[in-house]
Length: 177
Image (cartoon, rainbow, N blue to C red):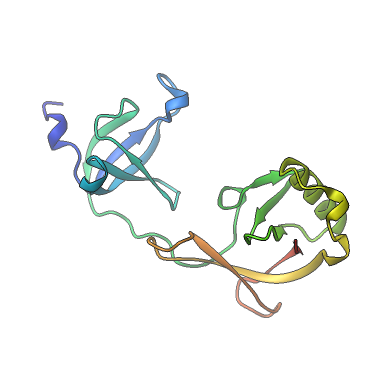
């Protein structure tokens, strides 16, 4: 390429991104420059394909490869969705788990009570919670739906309690703190 680095960082330019821990020869993840943020040291806001969150990187980051393709920045997905492990905190004992409040309430994406207890136990141990103070009788099977929020919201998504008849409702276990 004959372009200089200063011509490369433009909104809509396709990129390949390698995480710092994977340099120099790790996987290269495709994405797009979503925004140039001059107030943050002229960092680039990039969004990797298939992801909803953005990364902020300097334009000269060694793990960033500029491609020749440019175009519009695709809109973020909005509305209801079924969460995966990637949107939650992770997976414990094969069950996706996430804390949903500052108090430590958790949701477990399973309908099997024993799997929920096993996953919650592993999650809470990792969080250094004393299991003697966990109210296991509060573990209940509930219906909920997940909904993406606008990009500048405090959180990527919200979970709402609902009934089985609600559009895209899923069943999960809820354990209040």
